Image 1 (tube, rainbow, N blue to C red):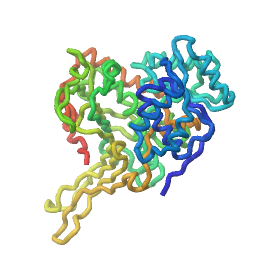
Image 2 (tube, rainbow, N blue to C red):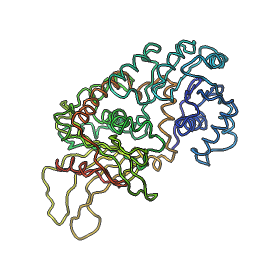
Image 3 (cartoon, helix red, strand yellow):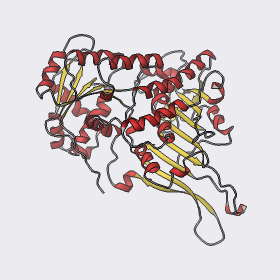
Length: 492
């Protein structure tokens, strides 16, 4: 079975921060793979822009090196590489001055004013307002322009509102694409298919049948060159406010009237507004903060956070676990246990839906323990879905029960390369499909839940607890779930 390639219109993709880390690791490889699969039409251009003064040829050399590092060797045939590199151009543009804007406009005008123009802000949020203003002020925008905004959108509710207002002065909401790459992952898309394209799960998807939900986003790496940003953000701002809350929404939403952008986002907004508040009254009971210490990973001994940061002290959390609850009819009484952190035991992201235990077992002790059914959706590193069931162990000698998975690995089942999430999202921008992008009120509703947690930690002086690198976080995160009679799902 081969995947269907849906063509898009001719476009210009302008990447501010075009020679930065995100462009090198994700954007250029993703666009190359779309070109390799024949999805990018002839005449489309990818234009890097930043303050650095380099030529078109210098930029193509940068892109070639990026592809050689981040694209599998078997995909780097000479002809496709040359075709893709020929689409690349570069202009020096300073967001905070008039430098380079006229040159960029002249390049864009060569293709006419009616072409789709997607401006990707692969820069820090401090430049979002300046760039949005510059694009508008210099006449680079048209009715078919899209603006792609990377996270974080603000660092709290007030700054998010200010940033959204700045962008809103120059672009309509239907032109703004706030990107969260987790929503482009194949397993996240399959969560929607499993729930709404099958009769099997949706009747069970409620507090009568679901015991609890776990969402884990674990990284085995440390700061990886992001010390300046990360120490000002921490795990709650960096991962929970955006990625993890979006996953909570997609697990918990009511069936939308369609998969159109606004019906889907309307339902996600309802979930965000239904989250039980976490503040000084309950923050100690339902949250855990951690900070990694020296330890070991699969690559050997690793430093602690403060050594990686190069500072004697820091109260920034590199791990957070939260027991979240959704106050609505469908999910009342069903805890959502979420955790994320750096320098954990392994790199892994998954959603685990654990169903309630059977009301009565007819099997005697010799058959073994009857475990609860689980639906495990793995987002990374190997995307797939497993439904854990109890079956009889084959063979004679009486009834012996085993807990086994019905396993569907997407790469193995469909025999296709598993595309990176950015590939889908970059093309959705060109199509003008906002379904997988956050609306302004979604972003602000997420901050409305996160802000009181941050304030409660500060007011109550709840410092991060140390945990050894290569483990699954502070011991108190285990206590968080085990005092409810549950345990964290062990990766298989």
